[in-house]
Length: 64
Image (cartoon, rainbow, N blue to C red):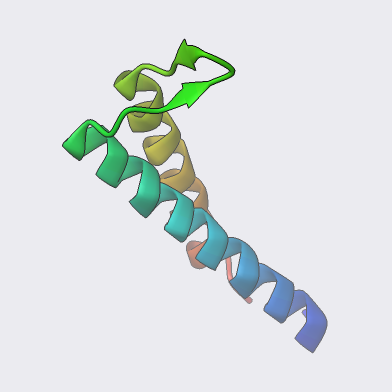
């Protein structure tokens, strides 16, 4: 993998990690979120945190 590919890879892993941390924190602390007047369930953040963490781990494991 060339240098720009590695940089892109690192950015993706960092973004998925940040997303997992923010969503996981929201799931644990129960922060309220509303989108267009609709209250988003906390369970949605737990699922998103899990998926983002798995993608970050997968990306980290497949680094070149």
